Amino acid sequence: MAQPADHHFDVIVVGGGAIGLSTGYHLGKRKAKTLVLEQFNFKNQLGSSAGVSRQYRIPYPEEYMVQMALDAQPYWDELQTLTPKTLLDKVGTLWFGDPAVHSTEGNIAEAEQALKALNVPYTSLTAKEIEAQYHFRNLPETYTGLFQADGASIDFRATIETLYQACERDPYTILQDESPVTAIEQDGKLFTVSTPKGVFTGEKLVLVPGPYIDGVINLLGFTIEATYWNMSSCYFKKTDPKIQYPTWFVFQNAIGSNGNQFYGFPGVDWDHPEYIRVAPDFVIDPLASPEQRTLVPNPQELAYTAAWVRDHMTGLDPTPYFTSTCLIALSKIPNKELLIDFAPPYVPNSQNIVVYATGWAAKFTPFLGKILTELALDGHSTFDISPFKLGYNYFKAI
Image 1 (cartoon, rainbow, N blue to C red):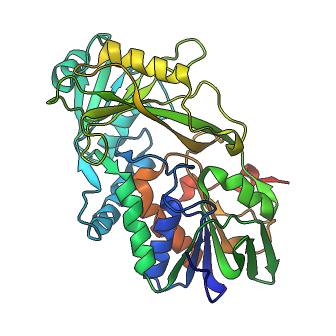
Image 2: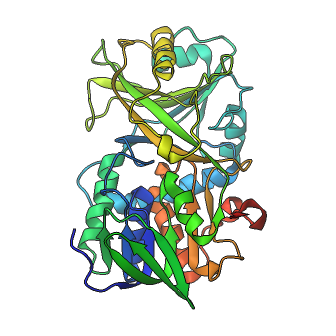
């Protein structure tokens, strides 16, 4: 990409993954002169944007998260108008398993209460009903479930491509790749951001580098508590070409020190349509930093996944194919999956530095870009982000 002729911007977005591109898109709509910096190439497979599919779902154990999923829907509708490709393949969301289990995804009973509170329709299911309607087998009789019809499989590759093209077309937005940020300095209220491809100045910063967040905010003198997962994923070939699944998640107690929770997708036209993607929602060995990530999945995680497919799914060959990994940062702060806030007050000009970090947020992609744009340009968001704010005590100065 050509280097920007003008090096001064209203807003500099650090991180060009899905959320960074969404922010660039919404900033462009507000006619803010915007630079989006990406340390690798755009549309890379090295961060939390890796892979081609994600789950859009409404069930959450917290009402505010259910509300956020509902509020995201109009922004998906808007994004859909920009591409002929179907971004959300509405196949429904199935949650099932041990009703007592609390996981990284939540809890089935609590999710039912949150859906009821917001009048979101869903269907409760017994283990036998799950087996009869959704092709699973050998489930313990004590398992329960819920099905919510608005769940979808996200064509995440097409989503990112749509946002990328929208930013490229926008006269107010510049995309700059291969530009890791090496320094951030301040002169009054002006930020100077250094990269190997140039030095840029901006009046506002939006920091959304995904799992590489610490490497950026360390430049401003603070850090956040996070752990890093190199998540495995694989596909299983259909032995019955007519078989189809919704998006799903199973809640089960861990086996020993290892996880025992899995999630899956339907077959999709945009990626290996004769296969079904199933993945573990755990890692055996969390990483201390993003530099430890690998593109090779953990073989034991794949073995656990294949065994679960063999024992509990029908119409699939339980041999893993087309394996991959995805790097994600997860907050260590209890009950705070997504962190959305301004920089801590001891950082100069903190109210002009917007930070988004950690968690599974693909389902909120077009909406998060809107929220971060409002925070940057207006100093507040029309959506209540109080559940996601870090607060002074959650930051750590370095």
